[in-house]
Length: 235
Length: 235
DNA sequence: TTTTGAATGTTGTATATACATTACCAGCGT
DNA sequence: ACGCTGGTAATGTATATACAACATTCAAAA
Image 1 (cartoon, rainbow over the protein chains, first blue to last red):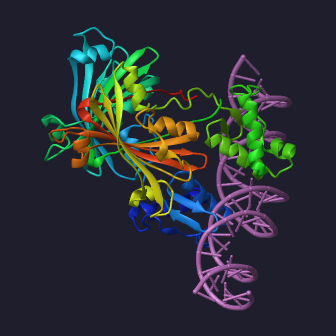
Image 2: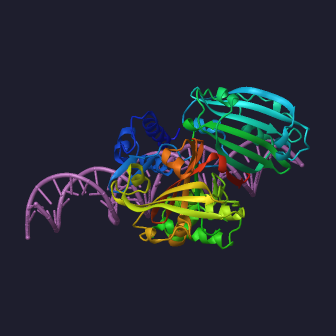
């Protein structure tokens, strides 16, 4: 690992563990350079990149400090839940609840642009972050585009990852809403009482048509969706 | 202007004007250093930052090339609520509940990157679709950037529209979550029972800093957030 | 007491240099 | 035609140094 990267890891760990709370001063470039026996420019790079990633804020003349609002910098890009969890240095695991071939239910067939009643592939998977369920992924897949969807092991690789490999995705559309979970969802999410849930419906398409339709349900108390966009000029 | 910034401008202009199309090679670090009479490390920084901004791609051993830029910012466009309602051919009207100058509450000051306790402008507005409340907009504005914010008539023009006119916005970040509404919100939204609400926190920034922080609360039963994005294929 | 100003520490920019790692290509031999 | 090899050029990492710009602190001066 590159030297600047080890320094980044060091600081990242301090922040992640809570040892350095919000606004806590981060060692200065010179101190870090001394501590890790590197030049100031190398220590500087570590702080610089952490700053670009939004973990620390820097002010000339004053110093470097742990940034407020922890880790809400996840772009609202198509990222799968597993990556997001691993990015937070948390453990992820998945439990496959359903993996079957079924006649397409009412709305699904139209969403997938298929004939009503034709067969589609269906999976229900619960995703856990540090042992706690944070997402139920209820997904329907077009079997003509992804015939071997049911033969995969989704404890090792998320459906999204598999779909990305098999068919190049070009578009996605989302519908986000706040709902109360059904009894079924409450069980899967291990919720004692009904609490607001963030429900994302995502439809992904490739060049050959609609590939998949997923309904992702998150308990409101355990999940926030962060997004960032820049209005670029020109281009 | 810093030297590395001049080089960035130079390359930016080449790309924007079309003189350097997609995949066109960009002058190497050494060539740029020679051309602008700077050290290689300075030329390097220009290319580095352009790469981080996604305008060029760099490959070790090969070189730097103009990135195959397609839809950079066609991310999730959260439209103005009034436009959205009118787009559906529905009636929109707004009721201004609060319009005041107050000391910045705890989290707001830091969100606006201002000193705690300094004064900020505050508005609370309810938006109606066909006579039914669909959004409570609770907004704090930086008074140094938008001094006349309180003098506008927000039944005619939404705060978002006014802010866009007054200050060119460059960035926005969002945080979306599902929550239960407070009593206050329930009254404003005319909700009989507590139901899940979609809450969007939006922070918009211009070139001079954070302009405004808004909390938009929608009743889950009356609102869904739609988004569409196309993403570029890796090459 | 208030203001001024100097000292110090921190980040920002810039330079010159060294070596590592990789992509690409020309030239070689088979 | 094919594969191998080495050279060249490009980016990636790291170092040591210098100075600029800014924030904070504290002591001296008004």
